[in-house]
Image (cartoon, rainbow, N blue to C red; front, side, top):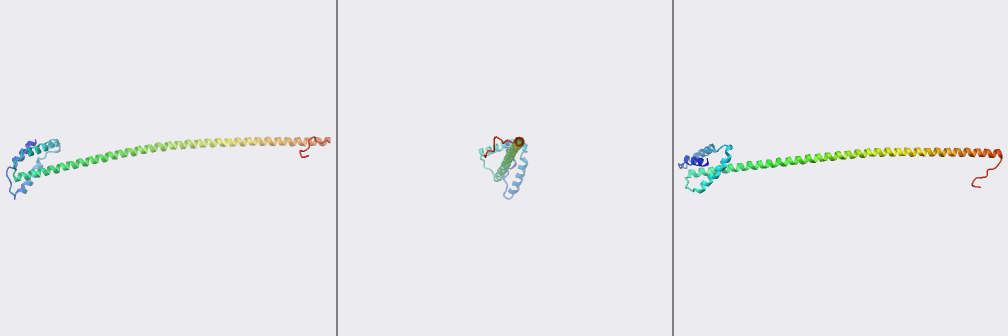
Length: 192
């Protein structure tokens, strides 16, 4: 296919243009080349054609007439611009891919971080609830112990009061007995 294109190009411009008509023919040649440029579906063939055309030009150094030389230079410029635009498009595509990949990874990291934070916060709340529950249980136990101590103290006070009452009653009975009999007690107060 590349050989057919190069044959077409050679057969189309065998006449050397005069300097006055060169720009007009240059425009026509560029328009024809645009029409000859294959569709994007044939990109693989085009890349092969570029390599074949370059080799034929290098291997056959002919004396080219001025119009053909201008057309070849223009073709080379068009090919160079086309190649540069493909490179630029590829570069932009790769940069976009890299940005999208990085954004995807960053969002995955953020999601991971949020899930870990949520899990840790839930664990902390559970621990706090357990501690509050234990604190309430211990407070209840302490209240029960305080109540038990208070009850035991009341019982001991009651026993002491009962014993005191008995001793007072006994002392009064003995005093009444001694009064009735007229005897003096054997034990006197400790101070005598």
